[in-house]
Length: 127
Image (cartoon, rainbow, N blue to C red; front, side):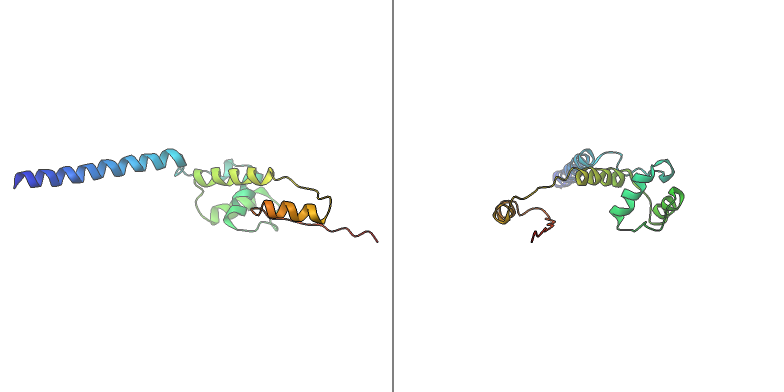
């Protein structure tokens, strides 16, 4: 009887330790401080606009930093992890390159080879 109880407690202890271990891995990957709050007052105007874009909110009618900051505060608490991911997303969008096509066949060749992107095509007809 005591042996069964001992193994049951040992089983739950091992489960508890494994859960904490996997939680530590997740903390390490996402950043240990990802759940800390960030004060929007300390952020630049550009960072505040990036946060609003990531949250899906428009800021076109807000010309001042104070107004944009208030909108960020009203839309919810700003976590450090959200700020980090928004800045990473902004860096990724800035590093987009453009391609000039020499002709229709060149366009089709590149589109068929790389179907993972969004293509914006400007057609210029010379008559």
